[in-house]
Structure formats: C-alpha cells, structure tokens
Image (cartoon, rainbow over the protein chains, first blue to last red):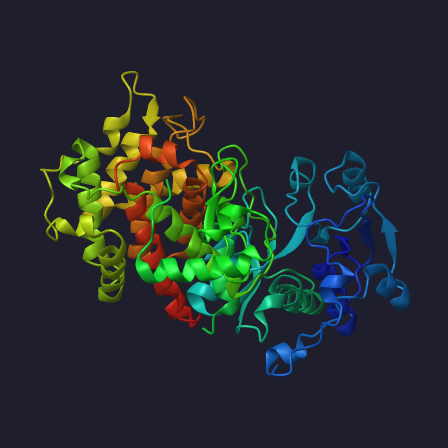
Length: 245
Length: 301
C-alpha cells in the first residue's frame, strides 16, 4: 500500500494489527515506531506476565477462533522477520514537534495510528492535510468515548469496532467500516486480546477494500450524535466480565 | 459511632472478622468486618480479605482515575456491597427517625425520590420489590411515609431559577434539586437530560462539583467540598439510570457514591439530611442487584 503508512507504539493492539496485516499481505509503505524510552510500561502495553501462558480458550468457536494472534510477539521482532520497513520516531510522544515534522516529511496521505492509550492527537497533526486512520473499540456512533466495549457488552451483549478518520471531536470522524462481534469466550482477557482482535479485524477489512478500490468509501459520513462514555467503573467492568449475557 | 447491624449480618461479619484477624494486626477487625481508616474513610474486608479501595481514602482530596482497573473476580462485588452497607448503616441514627421532622426542601426531595423508587422509577415492579425489601430491612423509618404521599406541596423549581441576579451563573445545588424533583415526578424533559449530562461530564473530568458554574456550564467556582452536591447528583443519576437503563449513568453514579462513602461520618451527618445518603445507597444497591441478575452474575444478596 504505497499511500498508507503507519505510526504506532508496541502495544497489544499494534501487535494484533500487524499480525493480521501480515496474514493478509497488507504491508504499509513505512512504519514510524514510537519507542518507549521510559522505565515503565505505557498505557496499552502488555507485560510478559499478563500474557504468559495465554492460550486460546478451549471453548472458542466461530469468529473468535479465526481472530487469533500472539500477544507476546513484539512489533520489532515481527517487522524484522517480515522485512517490513520501519524507523524510530524522534520522540515517544506523537505530538512532539520533531515527530510531527517526521510525519509531515513523509509523502503518504494516510497514516494508520496505533499509539499509547489515552493520547489524543494535537493540533499540529489534526490541522495537517494527512488522514489518520484509527479503529475505535466500539460500534459508532452509539458507543463513543472510553472503555466502550464493556458498556456494549452490558447493554447489547456484543462488542464493536469502527474504523474512522480522526477529527477534532473525539470519535466523531467519518466511519469507513464498522462491525459488531459476539461476546468473547474469556472476557477477563478483553482489554489486550479480544478488543485488540476485533479492531484488527475491522482494520484489515478496511485496508483490503482500499487496496482493491484505491479509495476510501464511507459507510457513515455523518458520525454525529450517539453518546460519550467515560472510563467504566470497576464494578460494572466486573459485571461485564462475569456476566453471561 | 459504629451502629450494630441486624443480627444475622452481624454474626456473619464477626465470623469474617475472626478469620481476618489471623491475617491482620489491626484490633478493630475483631469487632466488625469494617472500620474507619486514619483519614476517616470506611474500609471493609470481604471474606477474601479484599479492601474496597475506591472509598478507602478521602476522594475529595485524592480523586481516583479508575484507569486500567485490575480484574479481581467476585471478590470486588462482595467488597463493594460490604462498603455500601457499612456506610448505609452507619448513617442511620440510633433513635427512630421521624422523617417528617426533616426540614423544607430536603423533606420534599426525600419524599419524592422515595415515592418514585417505591413505584419502580421506570424500571418496573422487580426493582420496586427489590428496593422495598432493602428499605424494610435497613431503613424502616422511611417506610413510615405512606406510598406516594408528598410530605408537603412540592414547589417545582424552574431550572432557570438557579441563575443569580446577574443572570450569568448556574447554582449547582438548585439546578440539581430541580432535576431530581423533575426526574422523581417522571417529568424529565430533554433539557433535564442535557443538564444532567453536563454535570456528569464535569464530574467525570475533574471528579469535583463546584457550587457555581458560568451560564454555559464552564468555569466552576465557590468550592467543591459540599457533600450535598454529590448527593444530589447521585440521586439524579440513579433516577435517570432507572428510567433509561443506560450504563454510563450507572458508572458515574458509582463514582459519585464512592466519593460520598469516602468522606468522614461527621461531615456526612452535618451536610446531608437524615437518611438521605442511606436512601441513595439503598437505591444504588438495588440497581446493582438488578443489573447482576440481568447479566447472569451470581445472585447478589
């Protein structure tokens, strides 16, 4: 995909994205890697302890059986193995002036974005002429905001993922593709495994269509309305995980 | 002062405490399954020895972000229930309460909310039965008020009455009071919902509610430490949750009551009407019981 680059951190979500992209031969023209230069794991990153011994749940059937990825396989290991082109970002903060310049120096019109959790793209990038393709973990516009797949499980008994171009208003960019998924077999692994897998599935679908048609077709151009959600209270998170709906 | 619970529950708590005291150096644990920390916040253990951390320190001083919370299984649900029942019971006075002696607007608020809850508040008969069961056991004084009877003629506040003389500020207490009364009367319009969403947003972003905001609901000022503001927000969120079933209101309700349950007992008694917080907690517990049953989580008692 000559006109699509990627800017990403080594998170569980990025690992899912890249493994699915490899599976479907969807190589970005370049990947700019936001390397973690601090001593601690950043939001969205998964520790070896968290995924040590993770195995696909025995009862997994249907779509979740196909959406399998290895959460322990680091981004650089995979990229080196596949021979995909990548370069380190000038800073770990995507809104750093140097990183913004680095992105603007690239020729691609669209960047797949998969950064650290909780980071919002600043004016430097949002006011540029580049598209930032992001996959939100929730079915838009109904479930905007944070931790939305837990709310979705409680209210509708399903997960969602929606590919959008980022705009100034959170989760309100035009929707390219959106899907719902059945409840996962082991909800205690929602954050790093199933939410990431659902987003990766929608990303791949979006990129395959672009690769075939050479353009972005929007499923919903006007993504206004819906409801903004805030970080879910742990009690409700537990109800969603323990529930059988 | 610690208020003894009902016989069965006290025996259960003592049994738990006996188990827990083998693992703890704190002498208070020998008497009950809950105690007050140095900051005055209620701390409670469930049978797995897990503290309910979201109310274990004064959340006006140290707000909790709730980010990336750890999965802890059923133990968290048990810890939540113990925390809420502990505060609910602690706030009930030793002597029988005559709710009619509560003054003015507070009496109207409690009576209206109670009437709404006992009629299901839009969530149906199952919820009405659930809340009635809790009230009968924990807050029988509230049930001395006949169903649906307001204790006085309720003046309906216009949501615009809260503006000050200059017309450019919103009084949070008055606005939320009006919202609670409208929701209790099942009269909430989109204006009420929009205002509730605005206060919900402010609380979620800063974990604080200020006495006043600008007319466009920005720029909070004149202090945020009044427990009454959080009590009113909690009541409004609970009523709206029961009407709509939307989980975002449940989430903010839980954070709001986490904050209230983290405050010193004396402050709660000074700033909230008698049985006001206990009623809110009973209503919330009944909501969570309903949710647990709907989701197929084990029956929560």
